[in-house]
Amino acid sequence: MSRWKELPAELDQQMWQLVVQMRRLKDHTGLSLHALAAKTTFSKSSWERYLNGRTLPPRTAVEELASVCGSDPERLLALHEIAEAEWAASAASRNNGHGGTSEEPEPAPPPTPVPPGPHPLRLVLGGLACALVGGVIGALLVSAPWDDDSTDTGKASQSASASATASGAAFTYGGTYPCDFERRGGVLYAGHSTDHTSVIGLNVQGWPVVEAQCLLQHAGYSPGRIDGRFGQDTEIAVKRFQDKKRLDVDGLVGPQTWGALGR
Image (cartoon, rainbow, N blue to C red; front, side, top):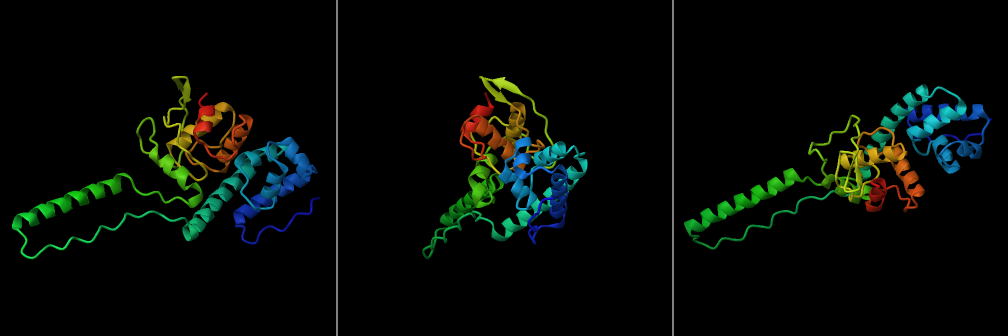
């Protein structure tokens, strides 16, 4: 029986239950972490993090552990789904408390003093100009709201929000999406975004993420649910794909990774 480290005190109840059940399965096999890594696609250090509660294990890790142990994965996957929701909520809370800076529109310059005795026509023209400028600024703010993602993924988030789906529909998180593969000009597309140059990474949501998840699935690297959210499962799939293709393994989908996915 392994002598496990005590789980972090700040670990929420759902995550605690998931880790305890995964530990029990691993102990039941009698495998060491090194042997477990040899039988799965995850490294020994990854299993150390997952089984000591330092990070949420991806869904694929839970499935592979159950497979190695000859156990039905349904119970573990149910626990994982609840733990994942709590983990995301905790991360959002931390980001709200310590999040990166969000950009705000610059304040309007102070009005230019009007000399005494203005001509009535000058007042009319000045009012029309102010109304026109205010309308343009308001339209820009409505059509392109500022991105409020964290510092680590700010660049990726802004690039993703600038991309549009091939169909022009607004992205809504909460479901899963089908993949409609088509090759145009020698490039493979999945029917959700024609922008294969934006940089997207962890915690980004949108059509470019759906596009990348479909292409990863097509290449044989499962990103988990194709839901348009760049979570840990998607990041792991990206890193495995980058390693296979001898690209920089950074977990971000940028121009080089897009190019390899589209071949």
